[in-house]
Image 1: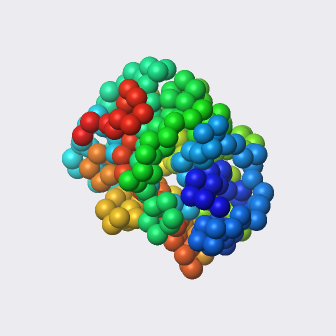
Image 2 (image 1 turned 120 degrees about the horizontal axis):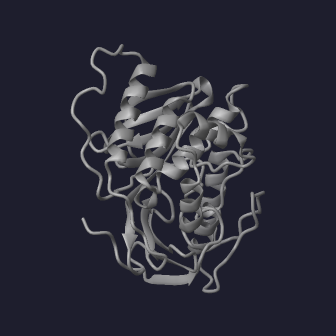
Amino acid sequence: MNEMDLLHRLRDEVPPQTDLRAEETRLLAAVRSGEQAPTRPVRRPPRRLRLGMALAGAFGLAAVTLTVTQTGEPAAPPGPARAGEPASPRADVATVLERAALVAEKSPTPAVRPDQWFYIKETQPGTPLPTFELWSRMDGSKEAIREEGGELKIGDGEKGPTNPLRTQAEVESFPDDPDALLTHLRALKRPRHAASICQPDCPPGTEKDVAVFGALQWYIKYGPIIPPDKRAVMYRAMAMIPNVKIEDTTTAEGRPGIGVALDLGEAGKGYTILDPETYRYLGHKVVRTDMTFAMSVLDSGVVDEPGQVPSP
């Protein structure tokens, strides 16, 4: 298996039944040995580009910490949102995510053309492809990838769940009320998952909460192309999920962040990591008793052509 094939496999969403540590070990062993890894069940058949490259995006890999740099967001207002609020986990999460929602609402509305490209730079330390950049044309027709230190490769667009046009359309159809949004996401038969926290061993009765938390995490990472009002309602909906609390945490590179944590006890804990000053999305990670998975997105935004990166 070459590195492009591995990257393609990482892009496929990991099914809930997959043992994450075993999956990672299996893929890495295959790369090092040069052999084809045994097949595993996936939610959709694999798709290769005509250029023979597996376009990146470990967007659906179930255990990772991202670090996303989104431009154009104002700084968070100082001080607590409501003076005198009790210092309980539920109060903290409501306060923090309401502030994040207010900041999102004040952000500029993205004006993205179909001929522009959504750009994201990701890293997963300690893997054969630790850092790569991905460009996805907004009309879905083309994609491009560049490994760290490598050449830019362009191929046909991805029609699956990482297509930014499809993601943008899904978010724009979300209800504007957080209760209604939770109902909408809980009703989905196969919601998106940025991170699989505990599947298949989630505590009874938490399965829907885990699915909704993962779906919100998935969509929030697309901040540069998400309307401000939709980003705000997603933050408010996340605050209403049971067992969600606020913790200090860090990204894979050690950058401090606000951890919006879905805490399922011994089953595991999933983090959505936000910038402590701007509430920009910094990523996610999964922590269990015997392991931690992490990935960071180092930059993201909208550019005019592949090879370009967002302005600082």
